[in-house]
Length: 624
Image (cartoon, rainbow, N blue to C red; front, side):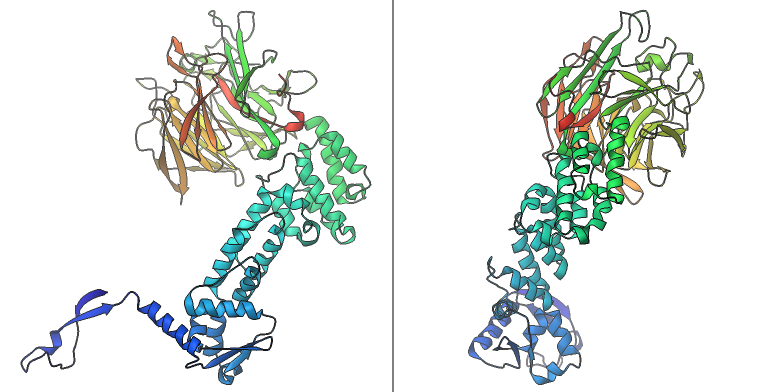
């Protein structure tokens, strides 16, 4: 029992004498927490005893007497009936055709007691009754019950049920189940008959569709169409646009086209498949739309150690370290035959199954960033190169030349393009940082100018969170301690081609050259190599909030950072000029824990690294 003190006008009572001040008497408000339950128990008792009934529900020849107040309190349907001037209000009863008597009885039990006995046999009919009567509490309870029991056999029926009756939770969980167990759902008898076009499109468009290879998605689309070719063939183009056709083996795609099925029909859908088949010859490995579940993932690492005489990549004294880490097997593999071009100041960026190398200095510049910056002049190049593993000959071929020569820039894949950002161009050291930004469409082989940076930025560190590119760096090239502060933070929208200067409180001082940026889905992470701490960035209404995510045990300066799925890998680095490490640590975002995995084949610092992933059917590094 709760008491609330206050003052109010009070009627004369035996406790007030003749001279008492009735206008300022103290009043105690009493609130009994169990009063509501007591009223509900009384109403249920009236129902059991048959007292005070004022309304009757008629369903399938059965009459269920009840109380208007209970119906109105539990159902928006009945509340509207009694509030409006409807005939049933005055008739004292209503006929409810099409409802289950058992389900209606369960609704009344719930309305009077707050409890309902839901089983696998009645859950669907109770759900439909609650939806019809607009009883949100019972509808939610039934939806949760059904959602907890979704399997491959009932997933599609429950998805249809949720769409018909508007249960957002059941719809969300059934949709998630269909994506996470797509192969099993396709095998269910209900797939071809109950699966609606929009449901199939929703599954096929999902990046996280759980399939072992893209052939499963193609076969599902064709299987669905063949169930009713006459009515469904017109939907083939829409379905094929969601299938990642370039991730399918060329031979399999050709067989599907020539099989006499839907792809053999002279229609728009077959044209889409034929075009993809032709593009696999010239552009295979350049389509960044592979689903994570269909790929094998590798961390690609490369470093060219310059000879003492300061040469660049020519001569027998140059030492190249090129290897890859198989994430699935926790093992490293040497790639000693890869003839990568690696100029000082060059940028390396993986793109789908390939690796692009852009720019750099052609003259004998020093490779370490501190020494490279101090060069009196830079002979930057606009050249670019492409490494495509798994081709007939392991070679690096020239890629389309950039629009502007640059060195010490950053490059990153976003959307279907490769972006190059910042850096310096040909000329003396005093030349400022480039504002120009350009992007390459690898399939078309064309560079395009993009919106320029809003300000000059040095030591650009970039990461792409889906279709947003984040750039961090410094406004100055050097400082008294060499390490300039991290004071630039920009974002770029691939869709709108617009830059935004972000204001985010970092919390403490960062060195621009000692920060690594990586993206995990839509979240940006920075790893501070000077304090061993990790922070995540959460955009919020144009500003931002940095959140501490813990600390890794130790990592060297100039280490590499790569995100793979939900994890962040920290590789190598140096603790001093004479102490370089080969250690690799992994931060698992789901558990907020770090672990150490297999070390690199060689200790490295200031090296290139990135994620390369192949469809499992054409993995050139699997058997190395």
